[in-house]
Length: 174
Image 1 (cartoon, rainbow, N blue to C red):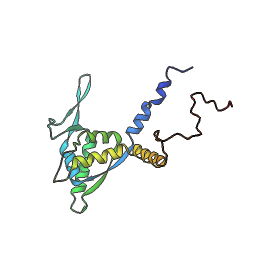
Image 2 (image 1 turned 60 degrees about the vertical axis):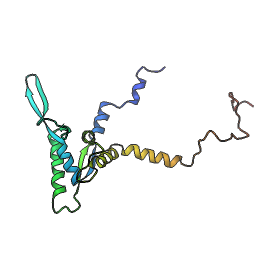
Image 3 (image 1 turned 180 degrees about the vertical axis):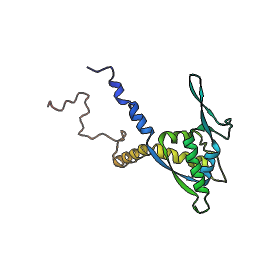
Image 4 (image 1 turned 90 degrees about the horizontal axis):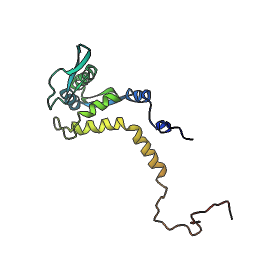
């Protein structure tokens, strides 16, 4: 007999989801990408009110300031700006550790058409972020494609002449 909750075994628990969202991934940022993110974010400030607290942007969100983020995100992006604009950093690149949930926040502000100093920062960030978020899925797909590349699953091929095509082909009875 099937338990009415059997269908739930395919869903992740809250603890599993939280663990996944807290995983740390490293995002490589160029100078232009770091500057774009810095220009896009505004600080999300928590205000105490009667009956609890509310979170409001520090400045009005305008189309160029795509979203409000917590102070730790502002600090990470600020550090990336400082690292990539340092005259000693000739590559103008840096790596920043973000949690998966932070990567989802970053994804929200990356329009693929955005350019900065002739660099397609929106497109580049979108690809980098999705690559990090979906790297396990991509690896699984590559592995699956590799092990199935020589398998012919075409149904258009002629059936073997000795194949038993009867619908009730119990092989134990002869």
